[in-house]
Image: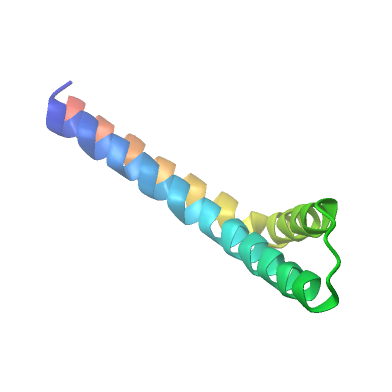
Length: 89
């Protein structure tokens, strides 16, 4: 396999990882920020208070976006396999 083909495939995989993980990370970040603001306002300094809501928000986001994520994953994987097959021929 040529270096350019390997680098292209690696780049496509990394971009796919970023696309699929971004919604969950953004939701977790926003929930963490809101909880931190709540902690600052009420002066409650409990470390576990931010952890549990972020996990719940991440799981809910994953459940809601799973069909889109699965379609994106299958489409991009199919494109990569077609790219590999066109290179091999």
